[in-house]
Amino acid sequence: MVSAGKVFKLKEQTGFQSLASKLKNLRREEIFDEKPHKFSLLTDVQDLSLKDNVLSGVFSWDLVTYVSHRGERIPIPKTIEAPFSFTKNKDSFYVTIVERKVLANNIANQLSEALFITSGHIVEAKISPEVLKEFHENNPEDTKVIFFDDVDIPNINKLSLYGSALMNTALYNDYCDHGKIWYIVFTSKKHRNIVGLTRNAVVTIFNQIGDIEFLNYVTDEIFPLIE
Image 1 (tube, rainbow, N blue to C red):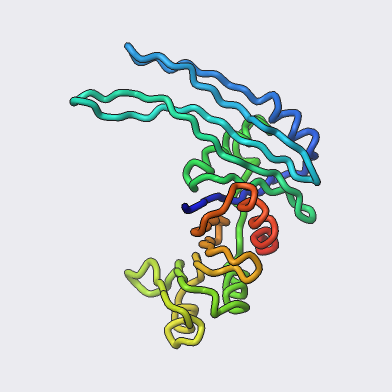
Image 2: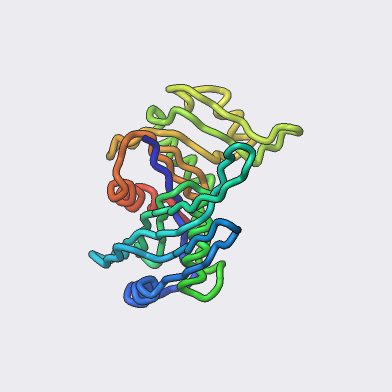
């Protein structure tokens, strides 16, 4: 089963106690009324825990999806439960949300509004192209897929390489001259996870892994790469 998540960065310094207090009180209820269907939709934080300078919990968010039944569009309530953790690394606060990119972005904005009144205080974490390139070249035999963006060849938006010896090819050097590494798939030497990583810190682990293991892996191997 694939696990996906994304790392974000807090724009301003804060403290764990302040974060915990605000998240503990986060609770929002909305009424969905589309006759004859009426639902109470809740947004809150569950299982909040502060331990060893890591504030973790589950962001629980009710939303409505639609299914088609005999030509009728029927609303159905659904609960998204996304584990998250706030972690301080050196002088920066990061929040990792274990959920697909689009939902993780939405949840990050909701957390920003709950903690700082408005969105924009929790922003995307960034890994520079140079750091991602160096990360790959330090472990070339473990990288199986590379995508390049920002390509300067007219009418070419992205380039890709697949294989087990990508660094030892003329194409790799040629592509590096024409674009920047955006995404790699590699096997972690330390953790042996098969990982997909983008420059905006979207992390996908393709082998089976639990949520806590996912968060621990990101803290250990991905945080040091972030600007």
